[in-house]
Amino acid sequence: MTSLTPPRRWLAGWILACICAAAPAQAQVVAYEVEFIHRAGFNGDFFNGGYFIAPALGGEGTFVFTTLERGRRILETTHGTGSFFTGVTSSGKYQTVVSASASSSEGTVRASYLAFAEATRWITLTTPEAITRLKLATRLHGESIAALDEGGTTALDGSTGFLNFSEMRLTLDETLTKQINEAGLTTADAVTRATTRLKRRGYSTPATTSTDTAE
Image (tube, rainbow, N blue to C red; front, side, top):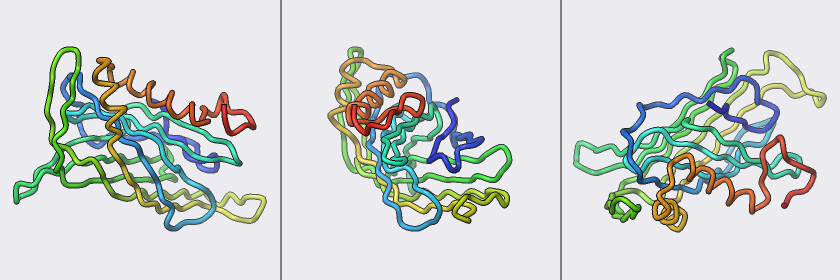
């Protein structure tokens, strides 16, 4: 499993834990574009966006996060780290939910991600094998909260620790979702497709990032 990689100040030891069990095997996939809007915090930037890819019927999803670090556009993929499911309230309303949690092995880094909305939209997913209609939320809203105790370590500027509170928004990318399903892509292949999109916007993985902000 790839570890979640926020900005460099608080990289070490992150392991994302999926909150629910894996979904049964099936072909349909959904792609949500993710946006983070910083609301409060100190000592560092956080993710600014990316994609969330998951089986349409629910299960483990993958985040592809983006961030700006010293002018560089960086992306990080976290395979199978999110949970995607549909819940039903006591009044019979369907809710689309995306969630994830993270912590370091030392317990010094803790983070949570949660967004949801009422499922009010019927969408049709067409694959080479089947046509499926699903009721989903196309716009989810929630929060991301993260904190790091740097154990008394002090930066050159005298600061220590990290905290971030961000609004989290997910919007169904209907064009990308349609392309993924019509091509019969697996979830892993869909993640590759989303990653390619982000690279075309100038993002790259840390190992390949140059001083340029565009390809």
